[in-house]
Amino acid sequence: MVSNKPWSLEAAARLFLTIIVSLFCGLCVSGLADALKPPWSPETRDLAEMVIMTVFLHGAALVWTGLFLRQQALSWREAFFKRAGGWRAAGLGLAVGAVSAPALVLVQDGLTALARKYWHWNLQAEELVQKLGSPHISEAAKIFIAVTAVVIAPVAEEVIFRGLLYPTVKQMGHRRAALFGTSILFALAHGSAMAFFPLMLFSMILIWLYEFCDNLLAPMMAHSALNALNYYWIVAAPAGAATAGGH
Image (cartoon, rainbow, N blue to C red; front, side, top):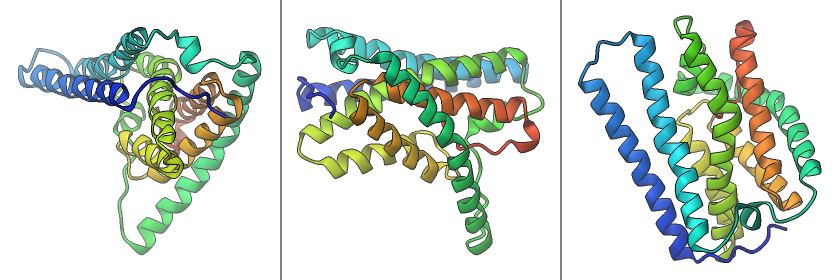
């Protein structure tokens, strides 16, 4: 079971609001940079936008979380990695992520086919996935996306959704809201109708991992494994570029 968290709902709410404000600032900076129309190539502009959003979302989330934990007189280990057995948690996370990736692709492909056949919905992949699959993307952008998807995003997103949001809502006595609410938010945050349901399912798997291991390293490694496999399928095997979303 996930260890009880000592912070209050008010303190957590302030942290989440700060992260949202940072995201809004990132959107403003990205929009301003685009409006100024610097003499950049389209590839350089795309890379700049990705860097800005990563700094203002994932980077800012980790910085604000570090300050939050300092105010609560907690270390990162005390807050998220309390139970021993880190290697075991990491191994289980990698295994679950590797098994989940192809299963989620099958779910996504099936639901996408149904949506197109019966409702005529032309569902699109996440914008970052579309950029990564573009033949015009630069090598620098590919490297940046790889580092973000496999290292930065899994750490930041697991801290936000599983480490902070899920246990905070759960400790209020709303177990179902914690499970389904945070999973829906996680899926919505990726901005892809095509990957919404697979990502919601994956979030529930990550929550189970966190509960089972009581160590955030497990869902972090599962998240990283899923993103790494998705990256490989898009970049190294473009002919079968279906992915289960996520970053």
